[in-house]
Length: 326
Image (cartoon, rainbow, N blue to C red; front, side, top):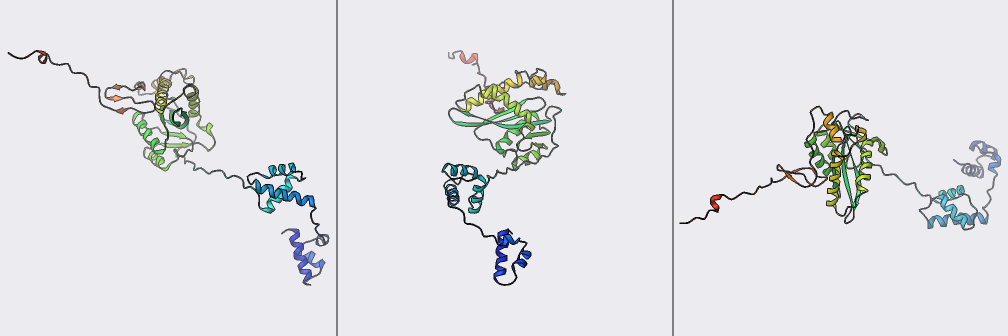
């Protein structure tokens, strides 16, 4: 309770002859000089400045107190920022602070952090964005093995939701086997319940980084830096199909040709073949469209899919070439 409110109550009690001034001051905890104080009416310049604060606040409801104070002073009134804040509070003109959107964070099912110790131990995935000249933006889902630095997938599409992420992961698991852990940020595609249920069925534990801490997912961030400098920033994509072809070629080059300094100047494929106890892995075909043994290596960013084998031409029989007749 403010002193002004207590002073008003004390004066009401004295006016009703319920007690004297001394007793009222003692009951309400007031000094006698406070009880006898008569507030003075504000001067004309002060009233004009306060009215200017109210008017400018109503004209500019999106501005804060400091900016409104600057506008009031530009209009020729003398007022401090503290007085501007007081007037705005009294008139109910304060601007509420912006509320940050609360995003749902993923629940890590594995120990965090987990350092990869062998091939297939920890995978990491994330999105990177770019655009085409004739169609707008597109997204690239990258899946990287943290131990061997292999880029298992660079899936290119306009829109990639949790359902498409599951499709890509099913094909990767069928080709390379399921990883023990997978690390990611708290993007809506990665924290979706549908994806979490699928990972739980495959016994893949999740490692979600803390919100706003991309350095905790350093392997994929480093990969995206190379991907941006060596591919996306050097190419001009006109269509989505062209971007898939170029990105697929770069992924094959990154895995099979480009030396990696952190791997002792070996390529990720060479390092994986030397480190794996089961021997070298099967060489990955170039991502250009081709038919080999009934399997076609589809466009970049897509995985191999079954297709019809190549039909060899049949040579006609010599008997058919010999004219018949008597």
